[in-house]
Length: 223
Ligand code: MG
Image 1 (cartoon, helix red, strand yellow):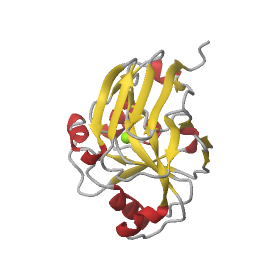
Image 2 (image 1 turned 30 degrees about the horizontal axis):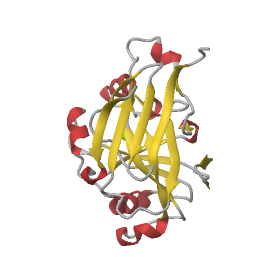
Image 3 (image 1 turned 90 degrees about the horizontal axis):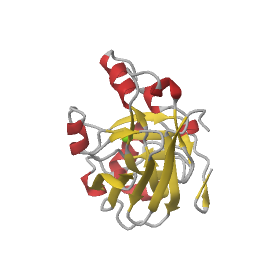
């Protein structure tokens, strides 16, 4: 897919869970002793200005009718990466972008409550907007203002300096378990302030130096 001027061919999306202390707190969860990661499928991906489709299966069922925004800094893998040292992390990163880890929150909580994986709640089509561009140069990815607005109102506002596990550690850690391939997308977790979105809402996700990713929410099969 083309993000800004760069074409990437991701094989997978890996997301960090609970990587900001304030977010772990708002989810009534502990700060993890080592990184927690999970996968999203490629069919989650949409670009800047493309719509997030709110699935009817969620919208029409009060037990699972909550979908949340999570704004995250993401980085793109440049070359095959397995068992790397944290110090050499820069050699393996193509650049940085904005990712929205859209989540079916009630479904996630329900599944977690009975020890099921949260895979389905994270993997509806369009639940992974990305863009609007990939920046190849970033002096310090750990000091960027990160913000999410819904209909012009600020809902999440933080700085990437508050990440618990920093990028060198994240990439080294994940590469101990699986091979990262060129184009793969790693999302570094969301700060606090996550909340529900509804059909008709406009999401604007911004990170310093990268820009603003804008996506409207629409109901599945609506005109
Ligand atoms: Mg997330």
